[in-house]
Length: 119
Image (cartoon, rainbow, N blue to C red; front, side):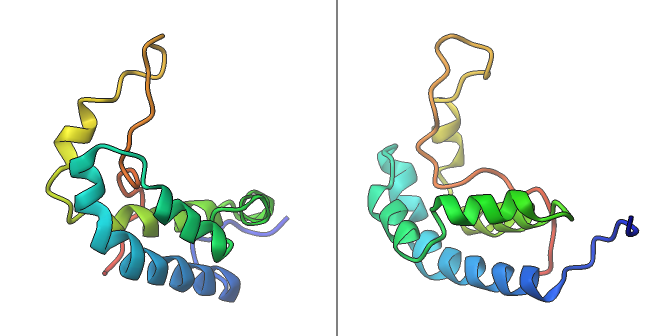
């Protein structure tokens, strides 16, 4: 068994750059508009699917990562993209606790970041 490390390997660094590029060029410019509309951003989801980011293979590879970091890296980069959106509170009012029978998914493009980085 290897020692646990938070250091990213080359594959994880490449995934981080790939997801960050998508988040920066596609998600971030559109985040405010979609948050304001409180609608699911289907065109952005379709674009993510077209590049393989929104796919079974990508998810499977993330969960197969023995370090457990790849999914967190991808989520962090997508979350970073929506941090500039001033409409964060409006999406929150549509969310209910997960245990609530009235829980509905948020229309927000992404959640809050988990890891902090220097971007």
